[in-house]
Length: 228
Image 1 (tube, one colour):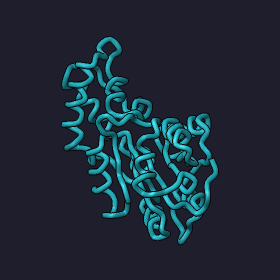
Image 2 (cartoon, one colour):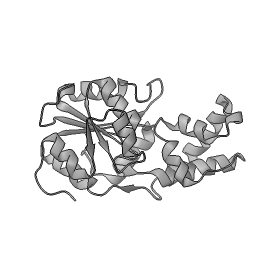
Image 3 (cartoon, rainbow, N blue to C red):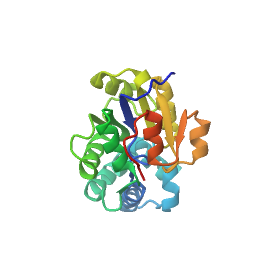
Image 4 (cartoon, helix red, strand yellow):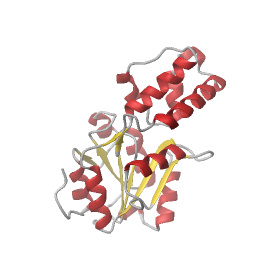
């Protein structure tokens, strides 16, 4: 895969990349588990539960002996009910991200979000934390659309933005994200500030590692002003 600088499109993962959502995800999952009488988890465990969508999050959080479709579904429904009301209680934007997105946007780069979080929650979080019309397209996990690392969500973004893979970067914080980029034929940037360790990004063949937001602009070939 050969990236042509400057980038015309940058696709971002959401959780662990743009927003630190882990405390709200952990709180909501623990609530749903407690609601149905199942053991809760320490928050330190949740970075390794998330990344593959809510169904997989709930499955991983439940005791192995009760991981039936029926139980996963009802616990997931309680999670969503609670999370919808509390998803911004502890969530915050990572340092430098707002400045980065504004610089990229002003530099003529299209911006998109591809998340394994359910679609409604993804859109509402973007609308809550970021300026209107900053992103050209925001997609979360939807019914009958496979979750990442399947490339379908990325192909949809490429089609709607009329952009070639060679002019696109994919930014994420996990091995799933690096696999998604590779499956899509897109150059990947792994961010070291997210939920998963840098070693996971390297093991999953990240093309670049960003240790701060400014690194993404530099890799994209767009740099208009300093970024924290």
